[in-house]
Length: 360
Image (tube, rainbow, N blue to C red):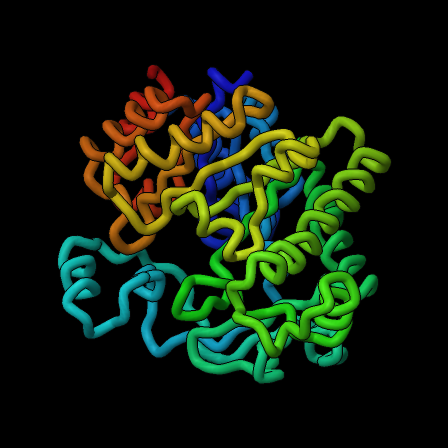
């Protein structure tokens, strides 16, 4: 199956994932375009039963996706895809990226956002060492997985996405967390997690370094246990549904530092497919190196898919480089290659590259 897989991620709203029956012709035209260019699976952010039904007519599977434990944020004062610039805006590195980047437009939000559960239950919010759980520019809100209610909310969110669309599976997207100057996640200092750590290791988290290996592993275990529980619920309620995980590609130690212990997830059979998301890079050697490491670690136990962005700043927007990245990802052990994101493919006229990726 993995060899024939050509995924495409698509946004909600607009022509790609309309919300009304009046847009059926537009959805049908989009799905037909996908089929004509070799796409075999769609990952909509949300999705509708109409999109699923029309896709199945053309043998395209649909797995809706959503961000893990993302409950609000205070957007920065800039719009469009430039907001994903990793380097600080105003720096020479950011300028070099933006000089090469062709911005991708979509509706922007400038007001603070927070989920209802994060608003009504501030006690569930993840806390930093200083006890902060409020919004600041360019930061986000997450919930502490030490609370059963927070875990249940997150589980229900993904199950609703699957059930409301009738999709074939669900994808959980892991974004970058709030990290310190060493790239280590700054959350987990709420009493439930901190007290459990002190009881187990005899160390007070506030008196040790944030990058203490035991402290990192302890916090990461809550994410692993969430996936273990969700995997069991999904298998019980929707035994035919697949569970895939997408992670932003990075150096091997950086995953655990951000509490994303994916090798343990693979070892414990907690996912069906692993997606390596090359989000803000167009470095071909990086694709080779990081894909090769992941493929070696996965060792064939689950399909490994390289997810190449042509949306984010610094990503693969040159057609020849995008195609070469796909070749190198396959040559480095990826079972398949997909492209993020559908409206960027449309605006940059990269459909012909999808056809060539499908032929690899």
